[in-house]
Length: 323
Image 1: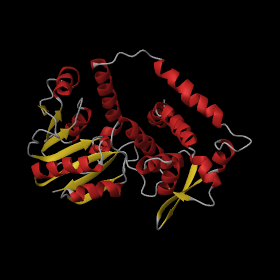
Image 2: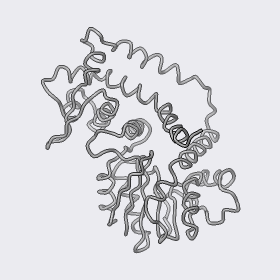
Image 3: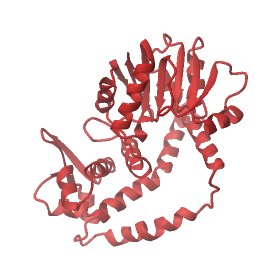
Image 4: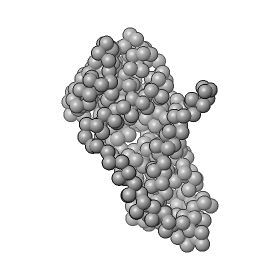
């Protein structure tokens, strides 16, 4: 087995994992009439105009349109007034109701009948088992992407590190592996911490400690560096600002915060994984995926400076802000 083949396996798995997201984005755009509206319009339309005409939320429609661009169902043109969208030939031919080759009704059958039936393919056990499955999944992600985001910047000056929402400790273990002089504390909810201690972090790993609490409600201890990995994308801007301001206040002078997120391109063209995850946030949480500029603005507004962005070439990227 060659190293090239080995590197390709995770990408194949991510594609399979996101398959249902792709389908539902296409189904939703069809059902809302996005492709029909753009076919009837005299030229490209902005997301605001599309949202107004179709009676949808502006932010939700913008993310839906961007995901459709990533799927090659729409094209986008950046103008001084913002992003303008138009159909691709594929969408005009197969996704509009008026086309002789329209697949609209077939897609609606899949969306409203088949898609719902497949939710019961596995009669999964919900409760603690689901949480543990999530923790194993997150550790699996960090086994592939963790070292890249931790190594994106030189973190050796930061010896006291708090991983906020560190879950099962996969990223914390990558951190102490690369920076043996540092200690990492996983700050998470009591139930998560208990499971992490019992199942994921070996007792002999003394440089990983635990702090039980809710970092939105409870005090955040002083540290050199705070890691927020896949945290801010769960929340709207105001909640992100609340947390970042709280971290800035607790952070030692010269310390910093490391954001680990899937970054959107500034020009709305992708990457597709980030566009799919942003749609997932729309239905699962109150947040969204963001561009480097959007994250940098949040950090700057909270008081952080010397903000740097590093693209890793993997699923997750890194942003470092200093106090």
